[in-house]
Length: 338
Image (cartoon, rainbow, N blue to C red; front, side):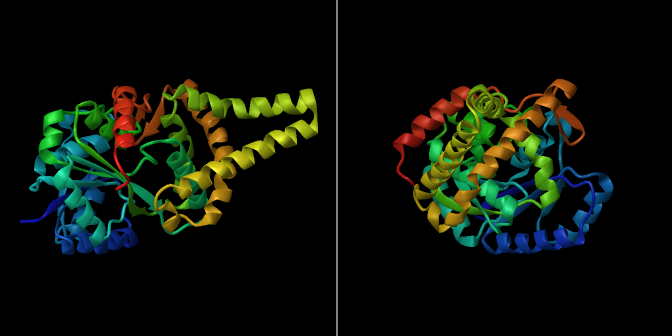
């Protein structure tokens, strides 16, 4: 009997030999760690067949049951996987997550005492665009009690069946699920010192993700308003008070961004996983997110949402975000760092 089910929802529009080989090696690692690897593949039929040939000896490679009917097809894959899981403990990871055997051990131990485990991610390797993302992670770690939003979590199967379905018509589905668990009273370990590696996207993919991540924040009106206001305030400072005022304004953003990232790095064990130089990329992330927020605003008014696969999703966050987030923050404040 396997100790847990490792659930990977995935969708690809084309087959890559190199990527398939990389996943095959990862599946071997997971299998050696005692995981029943379950891949829920929403790829087109031809790509699914090639993936099946590459992976079927290393995992259970299954099709997504779309009768669940959510706009975000990844959520359909997750619910299909929960139905097919043979273990009570389920570790869910995005396709860029890379657990080690020791991290699998720790998550499984935490699931003995908690119904849900919410780890933290760090990026490895670190090309320059990944350093900007790492700075974002540190800013979130500094400003959120629950720290940065991870691309992975773990939960008991019976708990998922008990709390029922979460909002699957949103872009930001990972955190929506966690907040649904929280709102429904699940016992959650906010393991802010359990760092799980995450592969950075290729540069082209990273560029594609910029407006999407900004769009996910549209329901967070204060945060979105701050980024929308930054260039307007710069214009006011420059035109009304001159170049010195503009330079002081930009310097304030630079120093504030670096300070926030540094504060996030000082929290818990983050310094072991985030080089100090990452903090200097925080102002670049602020500039990128400002530009991307306007880019996402274009998608909102021109298309009514943001593309996700072959669909347009109009919501970044869902029905449990506010109430579940409030419960999450209170619970995380009561817990020691894991």
